[in-house]
Length: 400
Image (cartoon, rainbow, N blue to C red; front, side, top):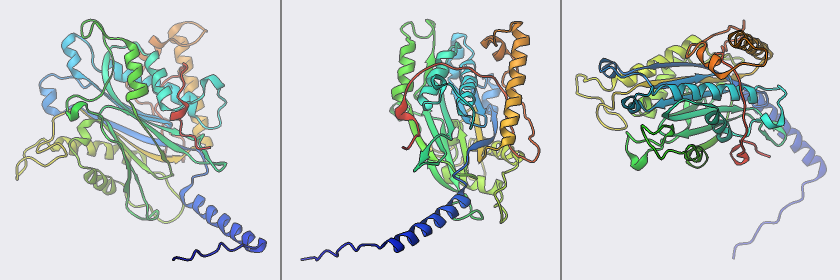
């Protein structure tokens, strides 16, 4: 017979001392990981059509998004070119609207009407899809930085990840202190029909040329029921890599982590300093180059990849982001960016009632506008804003 030890009463003074100790530990944890302040992304992108596909006349149908609150990759289905469609239009428009909605709903300390508030990544993508008009079919992955989540009353930023198809995301963190190498802490899984590398789950809008029976309600059902959604804690200094299947089919996770650690030097002791954007740009390009190199015959034959020797020749897109603090400077710069966008929209439309989707899409399509915020290393890509309505509170990263 095993005797159970009794629970001992802890006196008032003892408990007060323990509470003080817990408070000091929590303060130390907050200073180390910077979790009790709003965060955002500092990110860069790079995409390139595989040289062999380019020689055959294929157009790059990938699209990328790098904004302070939303990162994204979308890989358009190039087969639709056979039906006279531009396979890049839906991925590009979809990510532009996702950025608009995300920045409207997620900028810290900005007043938002209750009907326009962030309700999770599923609602955000549904709203974005309903606002788009382009035809096409695409896989998509979004990483949304939500600063509204609180645990025990304290701010605890989360990254909400939504994926449809075979784009993937890898999050890395310096788990053993600021001067330790980055290690993988989270990785999404691809969604492929019957496991076939050429048939990922997709979000589509097509006409009778492709499918006379197509119904947009099915697309909304794909978002609601088919998307995989995860919520992951975010800490200052986390590195996030989003990539199309051209990255993750050709590079093992260990290879990606090794490349990232080689490209981003271990920080010096002292307060956190954000990575220079140029280093993020170089890293994004290197990941694409390394993925394309896997389809080249080397001295020992074709290299090994997660899908077999030689991987696959594919359009390849990467977003490399770092989680950094959202500061007053960020707010000031983004307010300036929004004013510039609104003014350009008014001039384009010739009306004072607001900006139209056509004018906003026609402007700066696919280009990147960077605004330096002085001592801050974060930069922004500017587009415009819009909103709709939906509901999926269950997908929101709120922890009550």
